[in-house]
Image 1 (cartoon, one colour):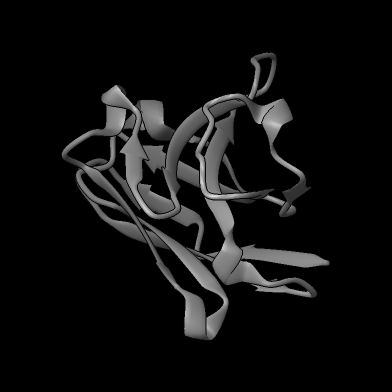
Image 2: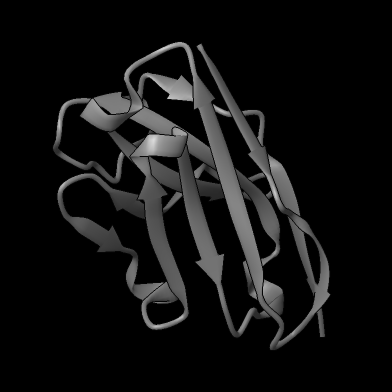
Length: 120
């Protein structure tokens, strides 16, 4: 099983980025996909999840959108109006079943993370 996250980078406040998570080795369409982020010294933080429904954390609501293309085995996180406090390593994750969870330990597979840095 591989989750390959990409799309991170260095941007300025107000810019946009689109992260991708390419999945191989399992049936992506039957799993719930989520995005988390983490900064040094802090726990991994839930950002958004997409299965049959979508849930986005309050602090990114209206700015971030989670989507997926099951035919391409790929998930996406579109991030608009980025702020310096969005700076973190972003991880994609998968869990079996159709229910999303905001708890990192509920997820079965993780990507390697992609760094997003937003300058002010």
